[in-house]
Every structure is written in structure tokens, then in C-alpha cells.
Length: 338
Ligand SMILES: [Zn+2]
Image (cartoon, rainbow, N blue to C red; front, side, top):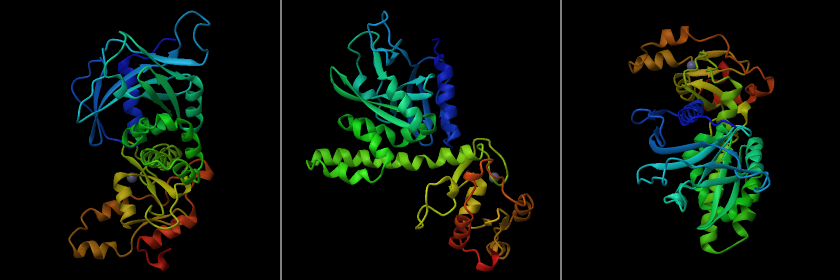
């Protein structure tokens, strides 16, 4: 199987992050050589990626489910204090990424090592979004993380800490599926270092569960703002009932894909979406904004609004009228306006 060249792997990696709303800058000129240096939002990353392929050697010498990356043209993984080093691979057959623990591979014990992952772990990640595998190495256990491209931004923001818990790899699937398992998982071993490690893992998996909101909402709206229709990598997943409010959920029906302008306008209550999907500017906005000399552009802003929002094609992904009603109340709309 021919692998993607590194430059194309990085292009795909960057595009996957941008689709989730991340701002990505490439540092230095793109040379096509590993590693790539990226700034994603406000953090720096050193990224090494290879294509994941079936195991090497003559037929029958390696397990049929073994997949791996073959490390070439680098002699160890660079670690820098102000950047995070990511070492991973892209599996075309499962459409997932897998990442190894870069801190375990600062120096290679052989010239061109290969890092393995089981194809069942990759397939599991393809179906639920995330899967982990404890990989025994000469230096001790290493946790391999496989994830769908939708969760790449989660991995960069929170997920790299998951590598700290190779002993708990088997618990991850249960924690993803069922938040109620958290308590039993924390209580089953009372020794302080284990509790501390497991507490961190629970936080990471919780962030993963929340991270499903964004890709689900953006995909439902084809990555376009529900109000103005622009894409341009400027679209966020907005909560209709705000996260801090009781009853807020991460269901797609509590989400709207909105560009940065309309997201801010919605969150501050300047812009309202009615339960029948009509769009309007808050009735008090002109007077309030004029009083503080911040009404410039309001007429143009209002004139550019569509009569109703653009809805997802899938009826089940459309915003819940009940959530839209609560959202107007929470954001200070007069009861009569709804
Ligand atoms: Zn917009």
C-alpha cells in the first residue's frame, strides 16, 4: 500500500484541525521533511507522522492484525520545553490516526524502529471515536491512542495526557460509553498515586465526551454558519442553552453552527433565533447601543440577516424549539418577543 507523503499527511492533519475551528500556523518554510512545526491556537507542536501499514516480514511471521509505522529518516524524537511532540500515523483502512508516546522514544534502541498498533484498536476508534491500547515495550508499557479525525483537536488540547495511564488502557472504552463508571473506577484502588492518575484520566475522557459536540454540530450544518452561510474555517459550534445554564446538553439539537460574528451576537443576546427558526435583532438593541455609541453597522448587520436560519438537512439534527425558547429567556429577550 503506497503511503501518503509527509507533506500531504501534514496538509490533511492541518485541515482536520481547521475543520474543528482551530487556528493553525505553520512555522518556517514547508520543506516536506519531518518534523513539521505548527502553532495550533496558542500552543506549539512538533509533528511527526507516517502512514500506518500492515506488519512487515514474510507472511505468517507477524500477527495478521498488526499494523505499524516504520520510523525513517529521524534518529529520535525531539522534545522541547515549550512545544509538544506528537508522533503518529494515519490509517487509511480505518480512517483514524494513532499516536504513540513521544517521551518514550527520545532515543531509538535500533536504527529504524517500527511502532505497532493492533488493527482492532484502529477499528474500534473508527466506530466510537477513540480507543487505546497498552503496548508492552522494553522500557515498560506504552499507551497507544487511536482516534477519528473529528477528535484531533481534543487530542492536542487535552488528550495527550491520556498517555500517562497505560495501566488503565482497558478502562477507557467503559469510561467513554458510560459516565456512571467514573465513580467505581476511581474507588476501586484507593492508593493515592493510582487515584491521582485515574482522576486525570477521568478528566481527559470527560473532555472527550464533550468534544463530540463540536464535530457533530459542524458536520450537521456542513461547516457553514446557520445565519449567513459562510464557511471560511470561521465557524464554531455554539450551545443554544449555554453550558453554564442548568439543563444545557451536548446534544446536536442544543447546537448551532455559527461564524465568529454571529456566535458572539447570539451569545450576547443581540441576535435571537425563535423556536420557528426566524432570526431577529433584540428589540432593545438599537436604543441600548446608540446610548453607548456602539450602534455603528447595526443597520447593515440587521439587513443582512436571513428571515430564517439555514437548517441541517437531517431533521433529527435540527435545533430543539424548546432549547431555542430557553435560550431567548436566558439571554434577556422579553417574554412577548418569543
Ligand atoms: Zn455568520
